[in-house]
Every structure is written in structure tokens, then in C-alpha cells.
Length: 148
Image 1 (cartoon, one colour):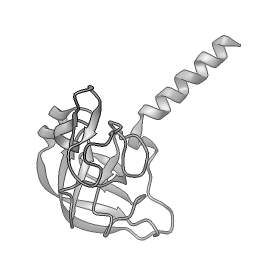
Image 2: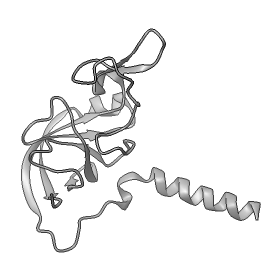
Image 3: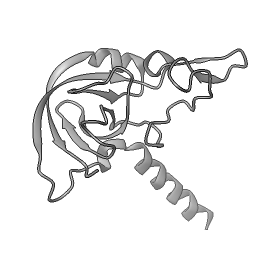
């Protein structure tokens, strides 16, 4: 029994870390290809606008939640950021919109960003160095817009 439970936990763990491997475009939704500015981000304070207060707790550094507790890695949609998480301008691309970026793979809009406006998306990377290495690129992106 314990061995079966451990096996199940391993499978659940592998599925949860696979990230965008489970993201696929929806059937029946037309694809639009657009040229966009594509940047990278991670969950660090430099990328996500938080710092540690004098208690050592992460807090927002600006905006309406300035000084309030920030759960590091939590996206605007309430999910934890992982490979495949995209930050976008929600006026153009609502939460749940699926995108395909060559060199990165499939992703889903689950987050916003203070500097992410218009035809600009931010791709999640696990490390700050990986996000910096991606840099800022102009890319052709396939978009399947979620229904609002």
C-alpha cells in the first residue's frame, strides 16, 4: 500500500513540474499570429516588485498593495508560476489565453506585469539568469484568445 502511494506521489510530482507540457491550444478557437516584444521574468524581487520587510517577510514594493504581504511565486490568476506561465496585458489577452512562442513552447496567460502593456508578453523562467539570458526579443507568437 505504501509503495503504491509513493509511486502515485512521484507521478503527481512529475506531472506538476512538467509545466507547459500539459498546455495545448483549445479546439475550435482560431489561431492568430502576431509579432510581439517577448521578455523573461522569474519570481525574484527584482522581476516581481517585492522586497523583504524588517521581519524578513516578502512585501509588495509599489501599487495598491504596497507594504502588504506577497506570496512569492503567486500569479494574478492565483496559481503558482511555473514554466509556461505568461504575463500579459489583460485588456488584450485575458487570463487563460494560450500562446506558442518558438524557442520557449506553449504557455498560458496567468499573470500581469507592471511594465507589460500592449503587444508585450513576459515568459516565466525558474532562474533570474535564465530570464536575463532570454532578454528582450521581437518574436512571432501564435495566440488562441480565451473567451472572456
